[in-house]
Length: 149
Image 1 (tube, one colour):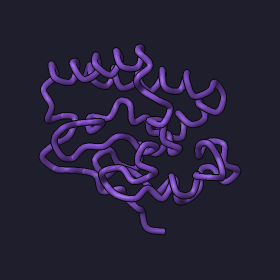
Image 2 (spheres, rainbow, N blue to C red; image 1 turned 90 degrees about the horizontal axis):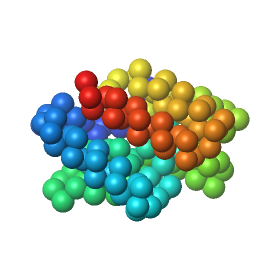
Image 3 (cartoon, one colour; image 1 turned 135 degrees about the vertical axis):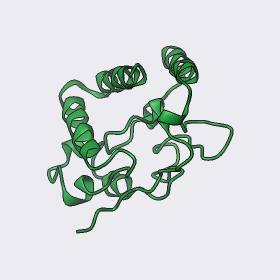
């Protein structure tokens, strides 16, 4: 099966092109919103991505997105086959009896490479064990760690 890369690489805009001070502001705003209860579990995608830390979340300029769950598996980059597969079957891929399947392993952002699939797989195993809230907290911590690089 050929990789089904989720072509949301936008070339001119990626995490590395955003100045560090703006990244910190984004992280702080999202952290404040989470503490205020403004970020819902709809920002937790079944694939192991936490949309709450995405640089495209609720941006005014394009590309923008309100999160996989809020857009019913149609984020700004297109249709997510993993969301379609999980909907109505399982809360997230990590509790599916076929996990990790070929569809999961072959769907990734080309900007991060296929290696990122295994980070998501680990996060889903963690989510299965400790629950969604701890998964969100860990996802936010990992994102903050990455922002600090």
